[in-house]
View 1: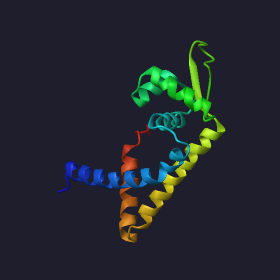
View 2: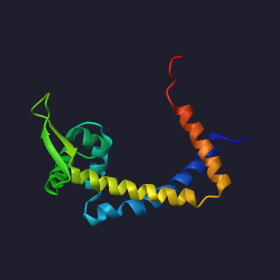
View 3: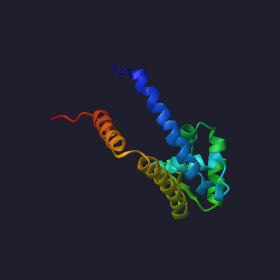
View 4: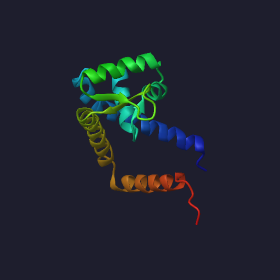
Length: 149
């Protein structure tokens, strides 16, 4: 019998291998721009949000103070990677978005990660790749919210 603990252990080991490979490949775009870890994380959080992001939301998502998030945003604005403006609903609130240059930088980082994933999956045998594909599709389908029928 396969236990949840066994699956979690194997999944964690596989994810750690994937993460290590993807980080090595994906971090180059940020290193070339000499971004700090906080700046890189700030860019990634902003890019993952569909709309303008408040600095206080960034701070919470990254796990840093609002002041530290504000400094990171200031630095990214200075680099031309992030734009900052007033919130339309509350002029006291500042919101941030990626500039075109910021989107390109994050895009190149994600492209490198996707290439690393393709390399990992491409290195698997056809039967293992097929099994992994079926297992992931099933897991994703089971995790989807139920829709009323």
